[in-house]
Length: 262
Image (cartoon, rainbow, N blue to C red; front, side, top):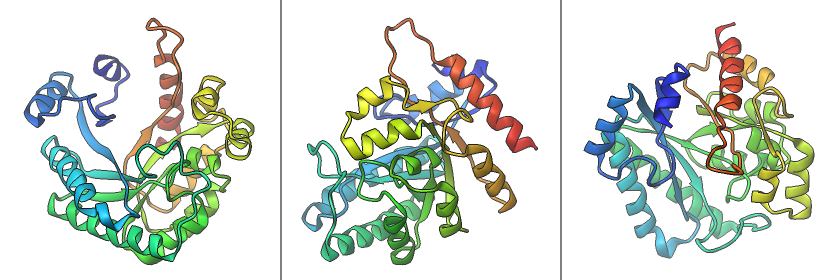
């Protein structure tokens, strides 16, 4: 996969899911240098609304942040997930105490990131504890944390990406670009269609061919003088090991390069 990344002229990647790169940072650095790429970000998932497990969750994040900094990363993307073992956070509503714990621990994660000289970007996402505009507003008011802005996943939760851009002006630390079919997203959100099945039915689209208004999003970010990274993400389910998603990835890459260069 790293060879395919290089063949597209891409020199920066996200760290990927656990196990994609070696757990030992020296081995990971050797691998990415061999393929002429660098790691700029990595994602951590943690349960942050339960006070009684804060120690283990922060230790998990600290370990990942240490590894990420060692391989040259700049930004830790944080997802506040539902309790492990729960199928989804959709429909879970935090009470005041839960929100207080969540916001307090996000502040603690900021300190962890600062210790490792990383930027924190919290990702609002379907199936996590921070999803739509009201959750994002509570995050922005209750913490100093930056945001990982993903227009596709905002459409997933029924939000308008441009409204969220306005709400979070000046707090966007990282951008991850997804595009989605809004009709399929609505079926997942409102009718409980299985997420993995929805992905196989074309939930995510090459950038510019879905309903996340990616072109307007990028134009708005450029006008606001956003100068951070744009990460391209396109979840697919491969029918066989011979399937290659590189064609769709190249289409999205060319699309973003044209807009960013404009």
